[in-house]
Image (cartoon, rainbow, N blue to C red):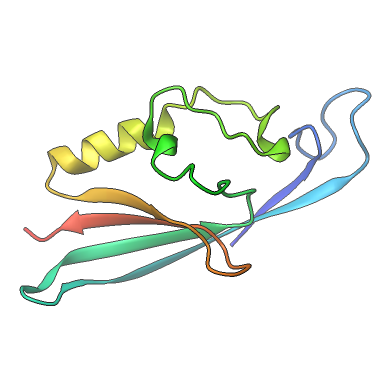
Length: 120
């Protein structure tokens, strides 16, 4: 799904003053699949989310679940947000028997965020 267009400062079309004219296309793909365990079979549903964001630098995957964490990539330095989204989401999912994990990209691919909803 196409989420819209924003300028380099993160302002939507027609917003902001003195911002960059450079436009960035935003998109996200969401796929739902059975969550399979080799021993237990179907254990729930995985919701797999990928987007065209900057992703994570090498070694940052587990850090991303720390409260207040901010990415070190140049594209992330000026992003808005509290750094609480992934930690709170993972805590909620674990409280319901599920989980959230981040799979780093493989050779030029996209980072995947996998939300596992436990069967039940």
